[in-house]
Amino acid sequence: MAKCELTGKIPQSGNNVSHAKNRNKRKFKLNLQKVSFWSSKLNKKISITAATSAIRDIDKAGSFDAYLIKANNSYLSNKLQKVKKEIISNS
Image 1: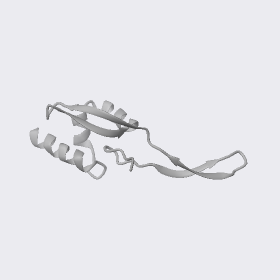
Image 2: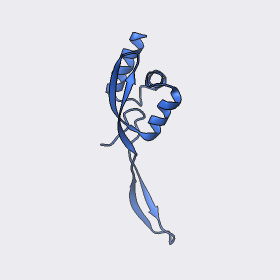
Image 3: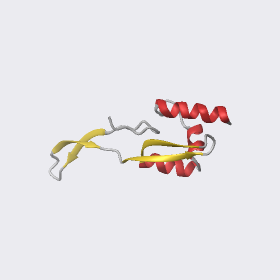
Image 4: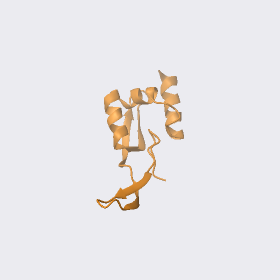
């Protein structure tokens, strides 16, 4: 299933609504990108699948490490929860 590893976002379903108010089922897909981020505290690259909105959030936070430290564990994938623990223990 297509899912953002940082935010936990998944595709949503809804309707296309025509001018005549006819409703047709559709999927609202995420703009997922495979990206690698450099962790300065772990000194290694971490490859993930992330939504473009999450990539912008990382830019706003300043760094990948800063974003992960502030992120809620319930939204992160298991892989990123382990990375977050490593970052916190290395601080």
